[in-house]
Length: 129
Image (tube, rainbow, N blue to C red; front, side):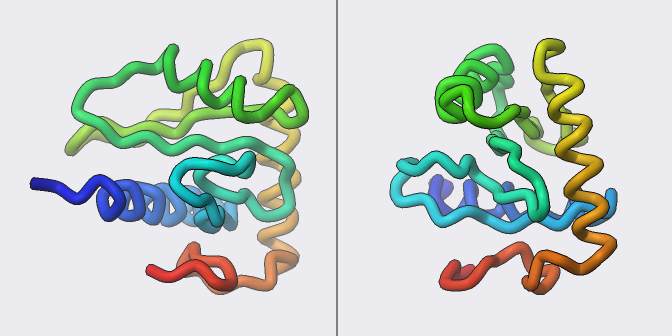
C-alpha cells in the first residue's frame, strides 16, 4: 500500500527538480491537509498558483478546475501533472497562457539573480522532507 502523503511529497519534489532543470526555483508550500491557497509549490519570484498531480489516471479538466478555484481569481494558475512512469505535462488554459508565461519569465529571472534565499532541495523554511 502506497502512503499517499509520501507519494504526494515525492511527486512534488520531482516537480521541483524538473522546474530547476528549466532554471525555475520552486519549493513545496506549507499546506495543512490540503488547506491553504499557495497550491502545492511556491514558484520563487512569481505569483502563480501551482498544482502538482501524479496519478495513474489523468483527470486534467478536474485538476484545472481545482487550480482555478484555489487561485480564487487572484493569480494565474497551471497544473503540472505526471502519470506513472511518464513525462511531466504542463496544463495551462488558453485564457491563462499570457499571464502564466509572464510569471514563468519573472520566476526564471528571480532564480538567475538568486533572489529566493533557499537552497535547491525544494524545501522552504520549516518544511521537513
